[in-house]
Picture (cartoon, rainbow, N blue to C red):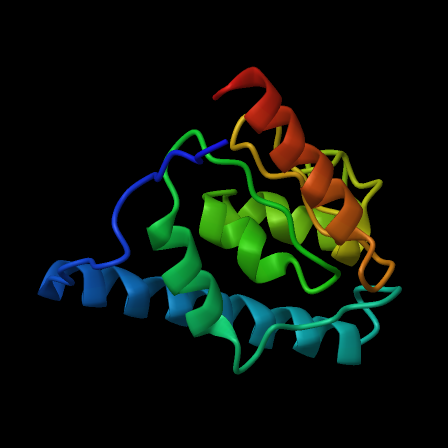
Length: 145
């Protein structure tokens, strides 16, 4: 069965796109720097896997998806959470285990989600997101969405 293509493999990148990528990369870098600093001060407990040096992956991949596309990632998910549009204050609140965090303080560093933004989150088990992502993709294909 032929698959339908969403978008093109070629994209004309404008100066505005480069600026958006840079701004997102800088947001992620600043956020991660502060999160790691707070872990070092023992103000945030538990695991905190930062995304430093990998910000461009999020910036590029998030600009390639469409609004209704679903995303999933692994345990380094702060950058992806910010990339899909979760407000940094809710991501930071999650790191602190606060009720106003993006998963009500229950997910911590490795388990951030947003139903409204179609973000199926990060997963603490290495590779654990692969069968979940496959299932999400199969469901979308089944629904022809």
